[in-house]
Length: 355
Image (cartoon, rainbow, N blue to C red; front, side, top):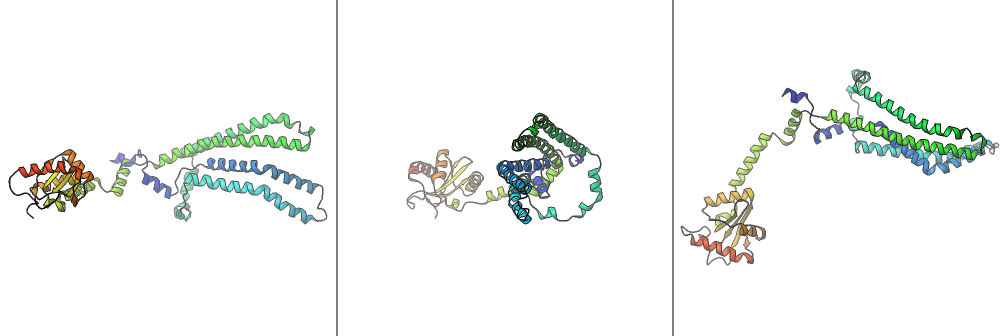
């Protein structure tokens, strides 16, 4: 029992996962956040970069030629729309990307409790534990080296391939040189995004493994949670037993006046009433399935109602018959044969014929 309490070997239950989520403990990756934001900004640059660059170039020409030397404030006024057109899409893409990845990782989690001040957050021992060497810190250092190596390799690969062309930029027109630099920059950004995505996948995997390990429960915890949510299994067993007993004790109102009970032999029970010379047709007075069908059999024995096993007829009556109404016309012949057998049984008066 002590081992069950100490060893967390069981996967987290849905309730445990929900409780952790309410506490703000979900699988999160900072590198995934960086990758998505970088990809969003790069997408915005691809869509608006050409127009923005053209606007900035025209503004630079206007400034260098001193067009507004007599009216400096005009240059300031011209800068506002140009810079807004260049920067606002990037800022919007960054905000949207951060919101999307945040919602994706937390599944829309928002709780006032997470931002409310808590005394334990001011505990210096917690911060000291985070600084001291540990398995987690070693993993973080390893991930940092991996990130630097991956991104450094991408930068080196792109820049080293572009150095020969950069050496010739002084011999070409400024616009041509700018296009060459923009081409290399675009290639660098694209490959950097791929590298960041690869790093994010690795980081998310480690974050998931850590979360899964911390969320595990002991067998004792699983049993205790089951008792709290569903009740003690022994108590549930007693409740089910009492319900079955109550179902057996509960008799169908129409069974007391039934002439015969047609069964199959445990799953279906249909009670019929027919008094010769009084009823125009046999009436279906009660029907039941499974446990209630067994209870009807027990009650029928106490009431001395004859029980006839006829599987096809019991199923047909249960499926097509309506309690309180005559039986369906297509079943008259089969029911008549059953009632005739009951009438030939002899013995005392039949229940249902005494009214």
